[in-house]
Image (cartoon, rainbow, N blue to C red; front, top):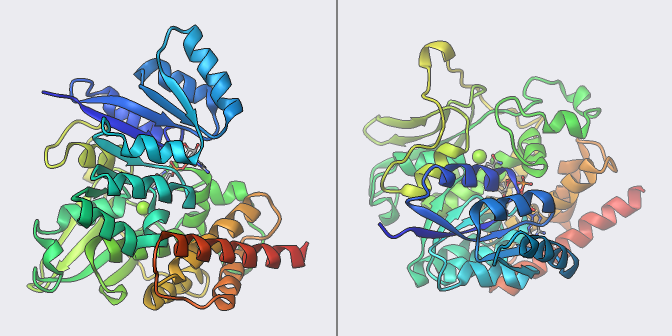
Length: 394
Ligand code: NAD
Ligand code: MG
């Protein structure tokens, strides 16, 4: 079997580490062609030593010099590159077969787009890329004949529950609704008054999943589910009204598809990202992911609840942006990134996050998306509006 060559963007993050864990179990099937990391250089060096990529991509020239020296001293031929253009370059490289898009936030958009335009197999964890620029990314995938496989556990579950020909239209294949499950995050049961006081560490202590800090805060505010609603609309060509959010605290049912004949298909599993990663890597085959078998008897019960839009206004903001379309989702995403960062730095309280996002959405009208530059411009302006809100409160 010829081995598939992987480019892992965001190798030092939570998804990146899980991806390397899965592929280390299958060195007969996969080899690492390129790894990237923006921080945690010690970890990136260890990953390079273990997986011997042709390229490593870091943030800047200083990091590149240091890592390059370290790897040379260890006898490795890995070439170390720096900067955003290098990320896009390795993603689109002719020797790359599969790209794991696992950079967090808007920084992942350009390299993910480059991978799609180069017709790669793209494993998409970086949901922000699709939220910002779904129309352009899906069009690039179609035009270049790329393959886009969702890594987000819910979307991977939906993909597994969809019929093979779902791209011909949900109505035509008899899909009535997509049921997107949400754990509800660490503050699912907290009352509104207490939410004002929560700390970044409390927000990052997710009950079921271990993840990077940005997505952990998004899960706590439920903006993660809002972003995932938008993500689902693009991936499955669904109208926002066809996607229903269901709170499911156990995170065992990863999402469901409701068919017109009354059948509801679900994908279940332990909450461990190695399952969707292994699924997408090997699709349409199946490989061992290292995840233990689901023990239904010890789980014993599965609960489902309606989300609370009062305590979690990010859900409403995301649904409104999904319905508005155009640049609205890029504005939503950019303002959220600024707000989450400010919360993590303890500049604002948790409940200010949706206030900042709504401020940015109100200050900038949504426009039909023209091209990538237009999306990036909407992103920049939304960040300016969010930052000026912050500055006015400092
Ligand atoms: P993380 O913070 O653990 O890792 C992010 C990675 O991106 C790191 O390698 C970091 O060095 C890199 N990075 C950060 N800023 C960068 C920049 N400006 N330029 C280049 N690289 C940069 O995040 P994560 O939890 O692994 O999440 C990654 C993506 O996957 C996010 O979009 C997230 O929403 C999505 N996702 C994660 C999970 C999960 O369980 N962790 C689940 C579903 C989806
Ligand atoms: Mg998810």
